[in-house]
Image (cartoon, rainbow, N blue to C red; front, side, top):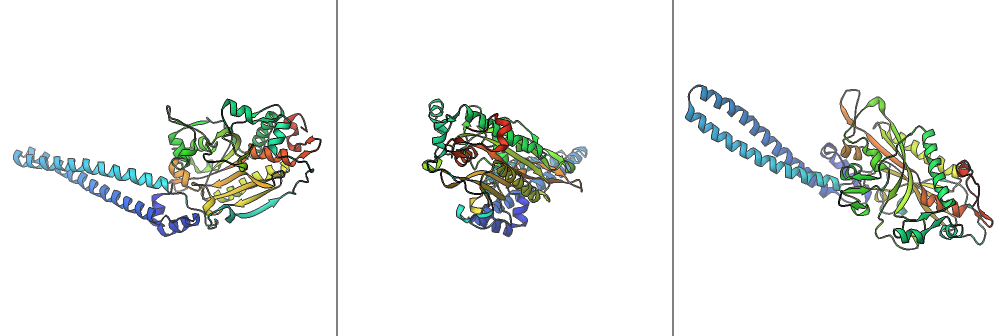
Length: 422
């Protein structure tokens, strides 16, 4: 969440940056400032009461020593009233603090200065494009027909076992999944990332820490008995490793990678655009996460973009990179690049990765700090990216590499597969 210092001291800039999301949050910021002022006023009053109570305690002690019991009793009554008033102030201050915290949780991150104003995906900027459109034979099929023809993914069986959006990968389809996961992990390890295998269930504090709660509460699978959530991405457990941690400056940046299944309810998603692997409730993803020095985070964001770009090139998929406008960015992001692969048979772009810098937004919730050169605690910047999400990558590979004789597979995956063609 945004820091109170930023809202207090850079109010105009905060409102201007939030306006890039095509929303007016000025009234919310004003309310936060009023709550903050009320809390600070109560705090001042409470401190004054405490000082008076301490002074009275000394006076009462001296009066008793001097044998002035009646005067001491009067002072004691005054002291009791002060203590009662202090308890009331503490209660009122706690109420204000809770309202203030909840209001802060509702405010999205301020977009970076590089982010453009915009409302919809049509306002996003294409900053890079690579590859040629595949030349497919006249009877080329979309991936949901190919997966059925070659027994790679069984959507009906998944529907029987669990429900729609939970496919069963079979035979060479399952092996392709495993090959992609291992390829993505190995590429990240070669780039200096440290592998983590985190839990796929997280507690409420972890959800709040990275900004999924309360913003995406309805999109997460929630186990109410234990109050645990299925993760929507490995970003959540991996970033929360550093919750309530003070790092040394020389430890930065910290680079982690993890593979996990991911779970998203995707409520309200219907129609042809979500057919097959285009949108699932459970899917596999390799995630890269960095904990960075604030002065280096945008340099590292570009480094992460280059890493994902390298994966796409090695897979030989036509793709483009978009810098998202303010209105299309995620709640917690300060700046996001989306990668889209070209789907040859569907003749459309499919999002396969988001790579983002959150600046201090998550770190402030997590209380993740580092000790700077002045030995003062300073909030880190957090970053993450999909490197990569599998479903639409698989869809693009199957569609773009299909021939009349079968499906050729990217050369980079051959060592992981044990076969070169389906």
